[in-house]
Length: 300
Image (tube, rainbow, N blue to C red):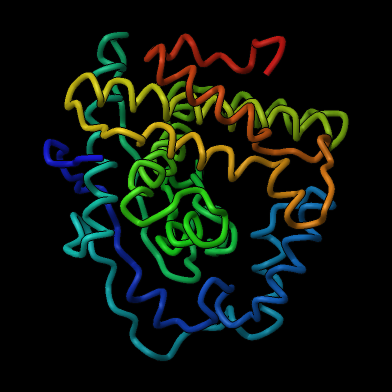
C-alpha cells in the first residue's frame, strides 16, 4: 500500500521510550514473567474476566505497581519521526479524514480518538495496557492503545502476512479496526451494547454480543479502506488478499485451535476466521456504514 497522499495525524501520543524504561519483559506486564501473563490470560478467558484486572492485581503483588524513582521521558505528542510511528500517524490521519467526511454527510461531527503508542505496558483509562493483550480501544478515555510489537506478531506469530512489506495493509486494517470501535462509541453503539452485556443472563450471551461488536469494527475498517481507495487509489495488488489473510489468522477459532487444540464457539469474542473476513469484505465492497449492521443481522 502507498501512503504518499495520506495526511499524518497529530493525535498520536508516543510513550514507547518511557514505557520501555519502566522495565518488564518485552511483551510482558511490567515486571511479570511471560509465563505469568499467559496463565492470567487463560484464567481470564475461562472465567470471562477482563485480563487487565488480573494483570493489574498481579503487578501490585509483585511490586510492579509501585512508584518509579527514575524520571520517565515525557510523552511525545504529534507525528513520530521513526518509520513505524509515522506509518501509524498516516493511517490514523486518513481514518480521521474519511470518517469526518462520512459523519458530515449525515450532519454529524466526528471527534477523532487519541492513539497511544507504548512498549510492554502502559497505564490508561481501562487499567494497565499490556502488549500481551493486543491493540485495543478504551472508551473511558477514548484512546487506542497500540504496542507496535504486535505488527511483528502478525508476521511471525500469527502468520497473517508473509513479509514486513506485505504486512502494511494488514497493519492498517488493525488500526482501522480499533478506530472502528471509536466510531461505534461516537454513534452511541458501544455504550448501548455494553449495557446489554451487563444485563446478559450469562457469559455466553455477553460473548455473543461482543462478537457482533468486533465484526462490526471489522466492517467499519473495510468501509474506511473503500473510501480511502476511492480517494487515493492507494492499494497495490495483493493488499486486500493479505488483509483477509490477517483477518483469518486472528479469528477466534484459529487462535483457540492453535492454543489448545480445540474450539469452543460459546467463548468466541471476536468471531471466526470466516466471519471476520466476510464482514471486512462487506465494508470494503459496499463502502457504507449501513452495510455493517451486525447487531440486527440474523446470521453472522
